[in-house]
Image (cartoon, rainbow, N blue to C red; front, top):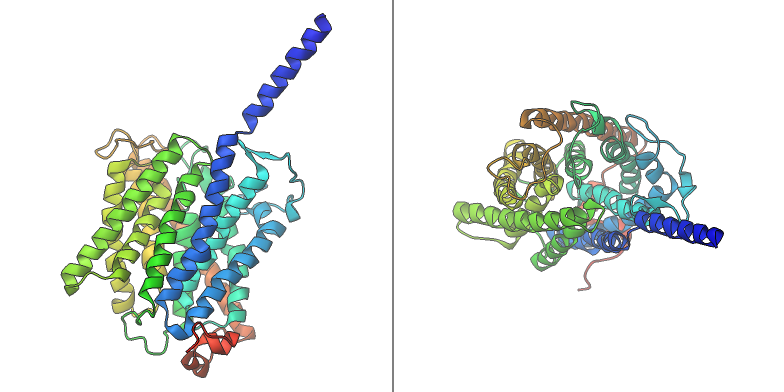
Length: 432
């Protein structure tokens, strides 16, 4: 009888331990978030970007986003996940999980099946190089786009991801050597890298034919609105999913994400309305994206009041950043990737240090910062921006320069005039 009771209690204890490791609620939410984040790229971002370009290039943008999703998915499985999340290197991981070696049905990552965590992180890896497409839309060869996206994912995204989320250098540069840069959902890993990568690509490739320091007219504003709405919905998975749990942190992240998006959209629309006398669909949609990009790194730190401020700053700062990039510096960042995502991501990285403390003016609902003082956290955040900015800028330029040594990265003048849909894919977005 004693032996039976002993065995019975051991089984109960074993069951409780195993069930505490795998949380079905967390797993369900991250499964949902994974679908939402992929939905951001396909079809959200593809439609948003596709509507913003001219009709002769719409299919090329859709094709680029779709192809990147396929390419990066394969690269993530083969080596990306391993380099991002395995090993203890300062700047990059190791290849211990090459081809997802060692990952099986019973593998656990936190409270999730490791397969779910891998797929969730894969969707982040997909959308980041897809965002860069907006900088070179309408003028990069399809073959060059494929090579560039894989190289950029490997040399820029993976090191940034490992340094911040994979236990690398930037995750341990705090005062006590245990805390580091706060980047809840990708202000540096996603938005700063894609924004600066886009800026370098836009400068390297040069202006589109017909660019006159103002955006070339979008061909389908209805498509822009639909794509932007999909991005807004998908972003709940992007930010709230980054809690990697179904808990109060995810709930607050979802709330502040929505607040910032709404305020960013209204702010951009209002400024445009005052300046030009008209409120536009493109303006309010772009302001929404700016609000989302800016709240992304801070969504796990700030509360509702902080989200109101971040949305206000996102809509205004990113609006004027677009004017400066195009009018002052005369850079043809086709779809404003750097001023919206790059500037927004860096702004959010800094703002979370200033308003993330529960004791501050905007502290209601805030989660708190990692460092002992606001200044200490701000310095850590600045270091993160500097490291990621230098890494991204140099690596992106090197990739494009090496590619240009072997073949022209940009399409010919004739191809640009004809449109990439026909020249690169022998298809048209619309049948006349």
